[in-house]
Image (tube, rainbow, N blue to C red; front, side):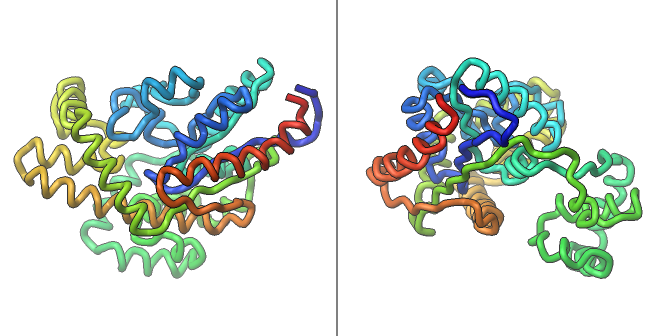
Length: 321
């Protein structure tokens, strides 16, 4: 690969959960002698491979994947820390003359790497716990209304996401500056020219795929995975939030504790995953750099891969792979 001080062309494949990102990324990596850098905030942890939808053993054997299953769930990884790790991985892939391909559905992780991230101070656990208790007491809407008085721009983006609400209020109370203000100050200048591609499907087709994947995960041993986590950490209630914040884990825990039926757990997981996929699409659709193609059925992946192959060939030639 040629060495240059110019921005590095970095292929990025994004889209909602269950749309088919991993399968397409693997095929593209095989075509271009590439390696995949995962941008997934859950797949980075060990022991939750089933519930996080991590690449299968066959996919891992076909193409090297990076930043998958590398941390214990007791460790937290911020978007900024992810970006720094990903930069090192990408640099190593390039040194070996291969094409790095960023693929995943964690929008904040992708943004942190390709655009840089603001230098917001780390979380203050005591303040965060106080705010979470306040949200539980006063309710989401009242707290969002309060945030809107000081940071109306960010309040509109929260979309009833408790985690984002708590973080925004925490940043304001601990720094005296709004999170929107912090976001205007990049922590570092990006080294990359992101060449971004998005996968999408019709709403009902994506819902059907999500439902099938939930059933596949349960059949593959999702319940046993959660039981192993409980044994490892000393009880269901002691499983780290890095796990329980992930889709489906709270519902599987509730089922294993006897609080809900398996059918009820599956229904709740489907609802929360549908809502999550909608939030992902809202996030990615706002990025006008992304070129979109809508898939329909598994056979459409061939057409998508061919189109993506043509698009990527241009940047591969530019970088002299």
